[in-house]
Length: 142
Image (tube, rainbow, N blue to C red; front, side, top):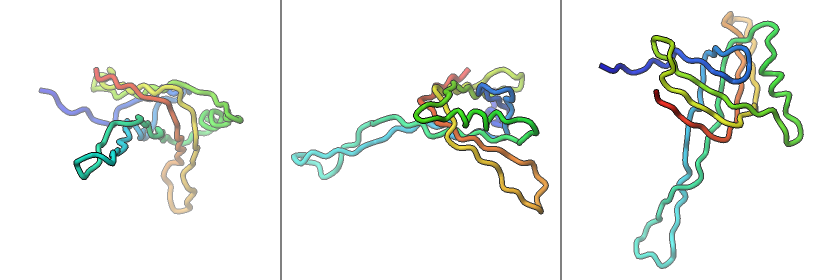
């Protein structure tokens, strides 16, 4: 019997030393669906056709650790129309630590770095959130 895969056992190869993250979101592929209507059409409705494929930004969230500036260093590679691009691999692991599903994102680069708010009454871990743009995603379901 096949059981659903749990979503809490994963790793991210993003070109940095730490591969563990608290959360990964934005593993999405969406196609535009522009509507078209010719004035001579008998039907009183639009025709919808597939359009450009769009890949929303990937968001990586992890705890902040002392002396770890890798997110900050990467976002600081942004210069006028240039940035250090990387291929990113997100891997969902099965119970035996083998890849179950692999998402491969190409030509990725950081577009936003955010830190969690500082709160005197909250002793939870400090988080850093990196938002990453990319040019496409392939999915391998093993």
